[in-house]
Amino acid sequence: MKAPLRFAILYERKLILLLCAIGALRVFIFSAAFPFFNNVDEQAHVDLVMKYARGHVPRDLGQYSSESAYYISLYGTPEFFMAPQQFETKDFPPPNWMLPAEQRDDVVKRNSDWWRSNQNHESGEPPLYYALAGLWLNLGRVSGITGGWLLYWVRFLNMFVAAALVWVGFVAAKLVFPDRQFMRLSVPLLLAVWPQTAFYSIQSDVLSPLCFGVAFVALIKFLQAEQPTLYLALLLGLALAATCLVKFGNVPLLAVALGAATFKVRQLARTRRLPAIIGSLSLLMFSVTLPIALWFVWNVQTFGDLTATAAKIEFLGWTHKPITRWLPHPIFSFRGLKEFWPELVASFWRGELLWHGRRLASHLSDVFYWVSSTAAIGFTVATLLRDTQINLRQRSNLWLALLSFAVLVVSTVLLSISFDYGECVYPSREHPYFTSGRLLSAAAVPFFLFYAQTIDALLSPIRRLPLRGLVFGGIVLFIVVSEIILSWPAFSSHYNLFHFNKAQ
Image (cartoon, rainbow, N blue to C red):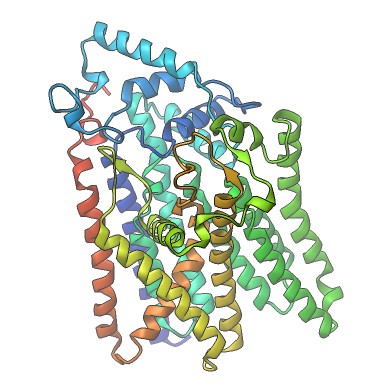
């Protein structure tokens, strides 16, 4: 390898490592700024992490544990759900941990009793995140971390996930566009500044982008390889299984992988090379199906149904609608689509946190997110159907990226139309839409791949790479500044890490 080329590769990798560090630092800062416990069921997820840390795997919905009830009662804030004007003093009360000992113990006991009397509706969720976070929690305990610091210690696990996700995005872009430096840098940069607030919370969704990101890279390599190795087959299989064992809503992604693998098998069959990879295909199927099958068996033995969702659905008051009642749904009207699509895509970018009882969002940034994303999807489809300059390998990989995102969108549509939500607050009969963008987050790497490809194509008239980078930098700056402005009030919260006293 020539010295200039070697230097360029080394410089690029150092730049990507810097982006990994930026992604991790961003998650650290915002995770510390937001107090506990947010509106995206963080109480329930913390309860499961603490149960798994103690080796207690739920066998039914069960009540909140005494340990998690204590933490929720002592360190929780009303700031996510209430405005200061709702209090007599027109301001939030001091955190419970700052109260005099006798008053604090009385408040914590009353609140703990209430939490212990409630069921945890997330108990049937797949175990992978909770097992990993439970191990991380135990590592914190062994290291002497206690109190509220321990809660933030679990959140800070997301730093490493964010850094790894940036690197995976770089690898994916390099595989699909090896000769386009703009793509190799823009995809990891977008992932480094992606303002999805799930990363500032204790919840299982945070692992979905990384697990499927690895699976997506492995799937591309599998499709590109003339003879996929056993190692590659095992990596792909385990990554797909992990994706499903993080979140049941990620299961539709198996259909995309199955379709791509079928395409590869047919391709090899035509060239009579199929017998040479029977071992790899068998290992792939085994490594995907065995972990998921074991999880299904556990669910049937404990919760009584294959996916362990029946109890949660009953708890939430939902009922299945017959298929004949699916189509008369407002989502298929222009008004319904206008309510569903912009919120779904905007929350894919910025998350779903409330602050003082209001959505942590701005109209300007939301419009940018959903309009640019919709344009990227449309442009990608048009490019793949018409542009003959894209080679066959890049075309198939972009189709794979587009389908990965699309199948999760279709899944949210099916969830929206297949239930009667009864008295549930979200979704509800008045607004029967699943607009939680974190349900699409598993496809983050594929999404930013075709999103960056769209930006690159639109900036192609600008020949000089530094100038194109300057324009792209303006987009990144808009994303970063929007997130800072929206999240800034949380930094002054007396309930967050920055205001913990030494006793914590």
